[in-house]
Length: 381
Image 1 (spheres, rainbow, N blue to C red):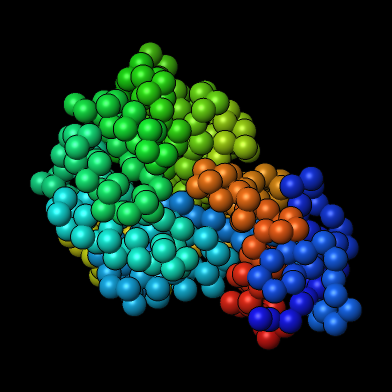
Image 2: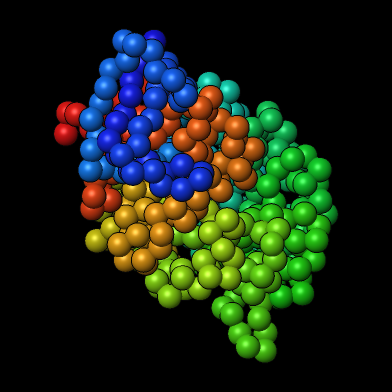
């Protein structure tokens, strides 16, 4: 077990607000309220200490895919995102053959059982061909509850979320099934109307998959799903804050209407995150990444992102002008609550996992700790 540590002198963001010249005590793998005499003191004066980031929608990174890779590939992607502050990550699958998705869910479930990932998100194949984005239209299907149940069962208790076009045949029944099973039903890649979206929320949907993207735009006569998802207190909205998926004004609009307690920053990252430009596969689809933007080779649709959550954090504060406390809620506390992990992660409180991120005064990442061990040691630079 790692020696006890006291991170001292930083601005520490707690659930109750920011404490200047604060300290975080780490005893073994957990945050503690008192420090033993032998605790190592780590001077982080002039820095911020915030909770480790929690990403509920991530397809890979470091050149490796969560959507179809081996154990080694997936762990490589997990490690890449950890080094960028994401200490808790849900692995997202993309549209594929149903039998393949079920088999791969078994691979991901093993890693979830080991604690390497926090669960599985199925993004597709139960989505609208009208709003398919970077998903193979030939593999899309209506959300038959029996097929949805097949994927949930294949995840062996580790399915956390399923993205659905809830207006499709079987959509509402599938939402009800997911709610009964304790799995998040997320409205996304949808062509639903305002009224249809309200029906999905009433049936049990609680998340908007990458709000604004892969859904009809907001209209003054046809308000569509965006309005329904923003105005309903039961919905948490995912936002991809990379400067490509959302204009800053759209992000501020979402924060204004949903409030900081109902926003979850995600990456929607694919293999190139933390790796570089080039050609990649997202499921069966070929992707070209140029200047950090991922697009399908055929058709040019945006194909996920190359975002890491440390960049999303910095942008939210320095470009979007959001309060640091609101960003911490969106990037840590809110997604932890959605996953049912708020008793362990998402905030810096005694008894919780010692998952934290150290940022300098420009909001660049300089340190990452996961369960009491440095992933990126701020003392080593």
